Image (cartoon, rainbow, N blue to C red; front, side, top):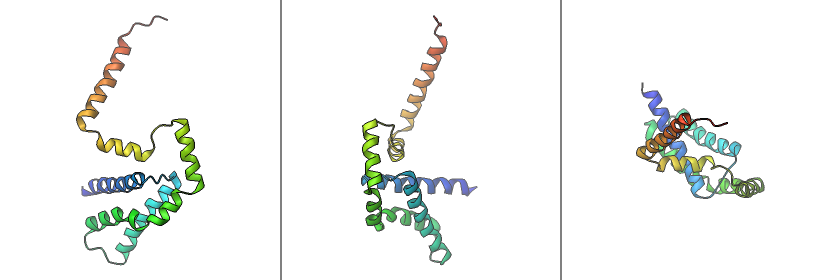
Length: 136
């Protein structure tokens, strides 16, 4: 029973890692971001295999939260590479939809009341459209 809850908690901690990168201005493409997340998880797995983990949750939290700071120089070099910089400029010029870290930050800031209000507006708009008589 606790497994789905623990997985959700681990996912939220991973979002913290992504937000930490975004707040520093280090935007990585999907493959580099996935490699970074995998590296953080590999560090935790290696510590578990070595028997250095007594209590998983506190260890996992600290490992994930410290990962960006510990590896900051390498991550910054990846983020500042030519491919990432050019894609960021093109994305800003195209006025694209928000990136994944921006969406995560927005979701964390949004309250339940705001979510319900937004859902009611969407449903009211759909109901109004359905009630509208088609002229053509």
